[in-house]
Structures are given as structure tokens and as C-alpha cells.
Length: 428
Image (cartoon, rainbow, N blue to C red; front, side):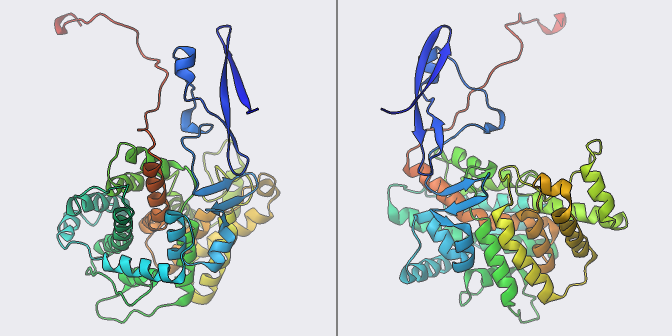
């Protein structure tokens, strides 16, 4: 006999089925709630207790610090796979064979050239424009240069759309940064790997040969894997709900980029570096700021520590901490900001207040440190997050469309004025 939840309202009992996930997660299926109760809805600001869909892409257990893509642990993927393998896994459901991976990369490269007229749109932005606003606009603009909608029932059409955005998006990322720095734009080098090409497009000077550093390449590859998907977060939910109206893939991704921009979401790693800059300007006294963080009356908040979902250590932070140590050690950078970051990390890991509350450094803390060490400007950090999250957004959009999910339409509890008599302007 299947399990059911019973709701009693106005003296009547209503039964709702229990849905059980493959990892034994339980949910109450309330899609018939309004009809069964005569208009009753649930109220859940922030959707903290609401499952918006059933998904087979990412499993996250915040209490136990578990993150898996398609059943594979994030630890195994970060250690044994590269970013394109993980992208293929997320989007298509299985790890690629060698032949599938080579074809995937070749097809991405073949679709990587962005229409030269996109440069005209980029030219219209001032150098002061935030890179996330620029990236969102350029991604949306791709729709104008690729006007045909995706036939989601066609595997070929879906695949072509995937490789097209996977090829063009890194170009837009690099152009966004180079525009701000006044550097010439190019289309990359198809002889390079995916991540190597991203780095070269971003950093190559017109009068120099770009030298690839394998430690930096590996660190960026891991960062992109760790950011590739994270279940139904703000930006992913945005991509799905925009796509549920049958908006195109590029338009849905543009909306996701805008959602990611916020400091409470993808902008958190930028907020970390801005906090470190503030501490530096105040003589770099980390102990003072640790005390401020523990003072409930002080408005200061320590950015990059703890996580809304993970109630234990962020599993991604465990992985990327090693890369952060390698990058800083190998590059030997003398940077007071990075020294402050290392000081905060050590104090938090050894301070009973933070240990007891499990306020450990999270992935945003370490990713900001790595990006700064690489020479990536602070306002580009969230753009790099978007580059990593791209395959997750694509996978979620694809799953939503293939599942034929209905258009997203949340309800509300109205708390405004009751019916009022209209007064003409002379009587107001």
C-alpha cells in the first residue's frame, strides 16, 4: 500500500500521495491541493520546502556533505574526469566514450565562431559595464543570430544547439573580459583543449606568445567541474521556469546568468574578495574581523564561510582547497589580499566558534582566491562561475523540455487592499 499524507481542513480529510526519490527523499505530491480543498495553497517563501520538479541530474545532501552528478561523486569526477566529460555526463546522462568525447569536442570547436556583428553589440557597452550584464546581453543576442527554435523532439537538433552554445559561450566570456581591458578580440585556437583555449582567449597579449601553466589549467578545470551543477538553486530554477514558457535555450540561459549575478548566489566569490579588500584597507587585522563576525550586534558578515545548503563542510571546498594551495605555492605570488585570506582560513578552521557552528570556508572562498591568483579581475569571478554552470543549465533546460513540464506559475496569498470605490482625480 502506497504511503499518503493526510491534511485535515474545515473538518474534511484529504489524502495526498508521497513521492519517493531514488535516494529515499520523500515529498508530498500536492498538485491536486487547490482542486481538492476548494482553493487552498501552500505558502513557502523562497521555496525552501518546495520541490519544483523531479530531476535525474544532481543529488545533493547538505546534512552529509554529499554532491553527485548523475550518480557519480563530485570527488571522483574532480579527480578523474575533465570538464568536457562532466559536461557531456550532465547533459546526456552518461560519461562519454573516447570516441564520443572527441566528437563532442570537435563539434564544439566547429560551432565556436561568433558572428562578427556581435562585436558591434559589445562595442556599445562602456568599459564600466559589469561583465555579468554584458555576458547576459551577449548570450541573449545570440538568439538574433540563431533565430530558429530548438526542436526538442529531435536528438540532432538538441545536440546541435548544445555544441553551439558550448562553443560560443567561452568566446563571449573572453570577449567580456578583454573589452574591459582594451585588448583585441579573437576566436581562440582549435588546436587547444577546451580549458586551455579559454585561458588563452582571456589572457593572450597581441605581442606575446601565451605560455600555458598546467597547474592553472588543472585548477580552472576543477573549478568548472565543481560549479557545473548544484540542483535547483536560484539560477537553475530561473532557467527552468523561463524555459517552461518554451522560451529558447539562449534566452533561458541569459535569464540564468542574470539570476547568478546576485551577491547571494554566484556573486558570493566576488563578495569574498571585496571583503578581503576592506580588511586590507583596515590594516589587515584578521583577528579584529573574526571578532566582528562573532558579535551578533555587529552588522559585519564573514563572506565565503558556511553554506545555505551544506550543514557540514562543503565537499567542493575540500577539493578546491588543494588546488588553491598548489596554485599559490607554484606561482609564489606576493599578495597581501591572499595572505589575509589564508589568515582567515586558518583562524576559522581552528576557532571553536566557527568549528562548532560548522562555518567552514566554502567553494566561493577558495574560488575567489584562485581566480585572483590567476590574474582574473574581481568583477569577472561570477562570469567564470557562469562558464562552469553552463552545462548544468543546459542539462536542466533539456530535462525540463523533454519531460514536458507545465509552465511555471507560482501562487500567492494576497494581502493588499479589499475592493475600493474609484474616485475621480478631482475628488482624491
